[in-house]
Length: 270
Image (tube, rainbow, N blue to C red; front, side):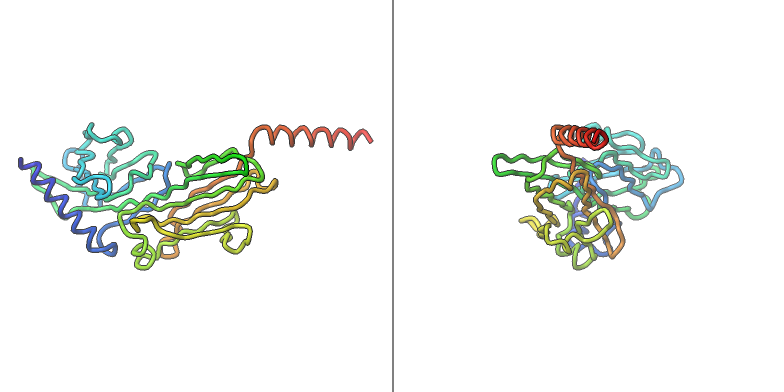
């Protein structure tokens, strides 16, 4: 019963902190899906193996606080436990981050059963890109879950890349209060809004808790192996980005290779 009360109290504390706004509440970590992340426990004691508890809260996905890890014992009732590990400095490692990992993480320290110092809270924001493409005769869609993705498509298709930032905080707060900005740029880092062949649209989800920026364009022959990046900056500092590389289908590549081979043979034979 006491454990349940402790969890309820912790949940109320985290929820209260989230409702007060973003500034000054906790540390903020921005990461792209598919990458590994390390969350620091800023109030760590010298020996944390048996004295550290990490919990996770997300009011959109869980109505209660989920205990992720205690010491080096991972809680088996969490779907992500195989991706978690505890560092010697009490930091929490999460491998292969997904968009569902966003939320508030809390590190607590205990000595002889008594909590020591304030909670160390970290808000994890996850950047994720999904892809859809279509042509006049057919359409297809796929999603990206890594920081560098490729999709096999073909010239003439219209492709839309949707870059979304998953967060516990509203998009308006992130943009206006924290100076978070999402941009689609080319390999040289040039904002694609300056190129008329790209349609760039910024918006937020219906619940206002996801910042979204989409890129739509019709693919050209020369777009094969072209790279676009969704870049996230926080107060004018680059925090993370997702790369998307266009890769045309094998038939297209094979045809091109045969054409080049035939043309080269003809050129040297004439």
